[in-house]
Image (cartoon, helix red, strand yellow):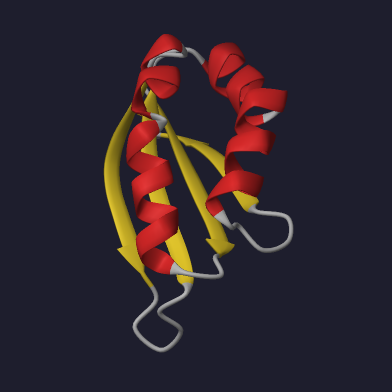
Amino acid sequence: MITIYVRHPVDEYTHWRRSFDAHETMRRRYGLRVLKVQRNIDHPLEIIIVLEAEDLALAREFAESDDLRMAMIRAGVVGRPEVWFAEDV
């Protein structure tokens, strides 16, 4: 199982959250499951997302997709997100 960690700032949380939730169908197409969505306590416009995937290649394809890039722009993600892929050891 692959775990994906994503961190990025947003310009407004409520708008971002609605957009994020609306993108669930696309995440499912790539075999991703959301484990957690968190906000940085000291910087509440910084979002941390933890996802799970069975297929690393599909997860990377999703992370690099134009669909995700455009969804992030529409959602108000500020700057380039940080993404890490990890596996259980």
